[in-house]
Amino acid sequence: MPRIEVAGRRVSVPETEDIHRILEPFGKLPDSSQGSRIQKYLAILLAWNQKLSLTSMDSAEEILSRQFGESLVAIEALPVEKGRLADVGTGAGFPGLALKIFAPSLEVTLIEQNLKKAAFLREAIRFLALEGVRVAATDYLSPKLEVQKFDWITAKALGRYEQVLSWATGWINASGQIVLWLGAEDSESIRRIPGWSWKKPIGVPQSKNRMILSGSPIPE
Image (cartoon, rainbow, N blue to C red; front, side, top):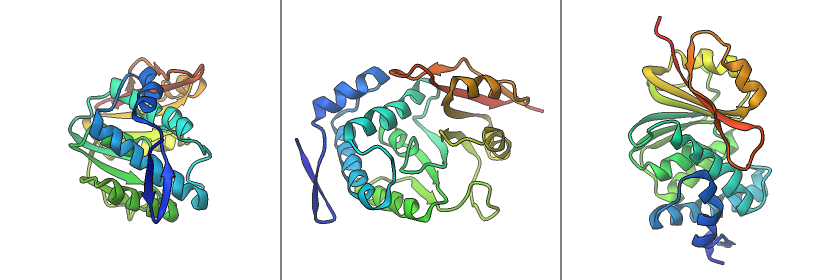
């Protein structure tokens, strides 16, 4: 098992073939460069997680499946090769950083109000040598948030969906999309919220209830 040094500590990460095996059900496999970045991301996340509790998942395999894998399902819903993306309540960087690894030309804004998590995100960006990524260490509703309009807005298990949609209407381009990770019951209720046109939900592999819902604001 490969070991990657993070802040003077060597962290074990999965082999490339194990990464491919775990991610294969989610429809997108990394090339060698992307695979290397995934390994480094796992290493720094596991190292920091021991002190900051960035995620409740403590194994690389579970993070690969539940975080990376579920993030990559979004590629089926939106063409993320170029454009601007805001990831609201990104936490440890999902789905924003996972999508950035697979779409290097994507401009990503990671919005995270927890200052310790925001510090981790900045260090992860440096450690992975990623360009075109910024961290907004504030609540997405804050008037101090300095953003431009986005082509895509993502929110993974954030909750408060009506509030998120209300905010998104002011920050998404006319042809843009919002992508939400949620349960089947929430999906049904959100699709009844006026002002949005929704695509058919996409089921998350290896989950009976979780899905991805994407939609666009209806022009006034």
